[in-house]
Length: 231
Image 1 (tube, rainbow, N blue to C red):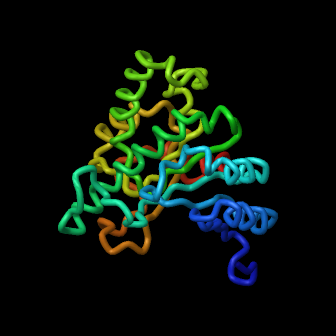
Image 2: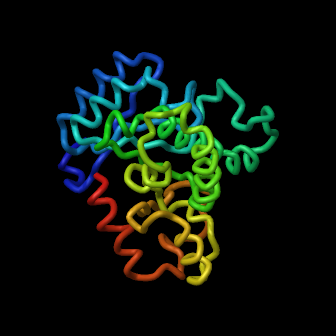
Image 3: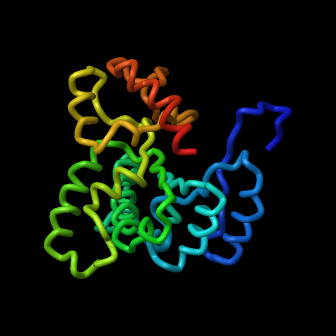
């Protein structure tokens, strides 16, 4: 990174998840440079990210004021679907959201945000529409089996509201304002959404950075207020 290019640039810290000690060293090495704003993981890695083996990374990230970013992608040591390997890219790409289901559930169930109450996780290129029904199901079952996870000290939807953020690409809803507002109303609040362009992915639809039906106040929150508060 260099300020000679553009002083506004910010970056993520990519860490070797196979070696936690080395990952922590990298977070500590880069985290002192305030141009780094998050530690980057992939959604379909070796283990669910809530596992305690990863907690030293989160401890360093929280202390240094970094978020954790979880991006669509896989190590491909495991099939990206629950039923084995797909044949085509479109299947793989559409199934990536399942990895985010796993990571959100793991981070909440394992108590990561109880242990590290200032930590935030940003779901990058996850889509948006899957989150509300998944969390409804997660919360419903939590009420029945919460004795199994007594460290979750409040409803999962509240944990989600305070600690999870989403990016606007891909915003998997039609462009009309009524539909967008109806879908986004299912989220706990508008502070969860951050702008992302998805550039330079070739499968990105069109050249508009924001859906045509997005209300101006929400667009400002996504592009200015929410990212500033998150990072």
